[in-house]
Length: 489
Image (cartoon, rainbow, N blue to C red; front, side, top):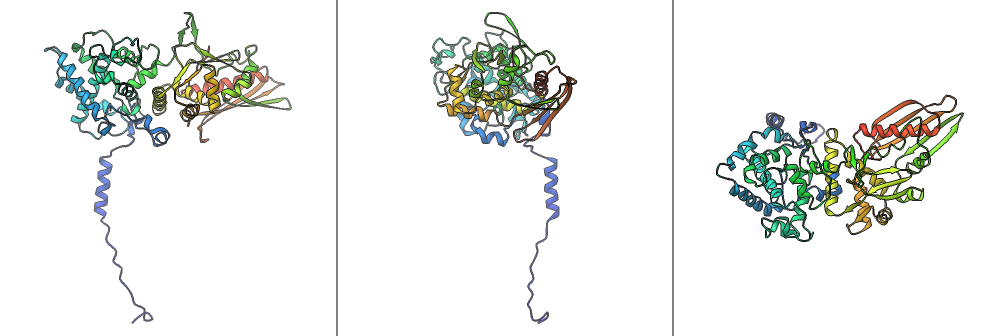
């Protein structure tokens, strides 16, 4: 034996198949199936798969219970029952179409011509053939159009009389079974469960011959349909991306709304509490200090600085002297603050509205640079006001909230989760008495503390209070630049 009598063993090492590995990589590079498509940041992309961190909060809020609309959930076994009724609705539409009207092949051709645009609306690769995608769009689109046309336009005198929703067929189980219609409405308003509005619009226009009423617009019929479940304002827009966005836009107050007395009222940002940097309104300084959390002032050699954090809970604001009042408004987003009184429109919290607001916020966050953030800002504001069940109880006593979720804890948790992961602002102001000048600084960070944006400005201000007011205004302006909106008279 060599080497001191020690034995040696041979360990075989398998060869690496470099060619196979390279071929596999080449195939993946050439034929990617994107979970987040490179074009998902375009304004045309408007229908998103929910990111994992949102699913962890409330997965059920984004996924359909009984009906799939579009390609994301069409193969889910839970929606098979409604697939049968979709085909029934399509048969009804085709049966009403006169002999010189559009047939099924025509609808297929119309949708096929839009295939590229349709695929561009979804955030992930649609792993369907052209034929299958067209079939889904035609079936789901015409089902939706037929659904809106079947439903009676006037709300039933008895809210529990669901059969009156469809005067043409009062025995239709879609409308007269109490567990079907509410779930159907919720499913039509989930972000993952949408098809592009331009597809609905084209199918609606092409199917005009099948309808007795050919004058109503698709948006009008859709909003009248949703009026059976949730109150909202009228809308005239051509910017809606899908049904969820159409309903979201209907909640946004117009630049001028009409008060119940018929008087036009100008809408201004809620947190813009001071109208003029150099001439703050009389009597507002104390209100500002109460409304905005904890102004900490320190004077040193004529220099006054203030550090401000937005916004305290409802109970704490009440203890600080802020009054709460229910506001009679056309939109629940029309919150106003005037002379120490915070006016908030009445809101009902139930299963539909919670799903609705969760999906509104999800859309605004996913479609971040291409739509306003009205609902997100409302959610962030309400999540500041409502931090405990006691805050819910207080707002219920003020008739601002009508809680149908079962407990105040559930309502508090809803707003807590709805307001998660949004932008927070830190605002600072300094003022030098000798020169009547100063600086303002605003820093925007997410909930983890990650820097998003900042602004620093030199200002002329006659007093420390004026400097504080300018700092608040600059914070609001940065928020507006990032897409946020709240409202005040």
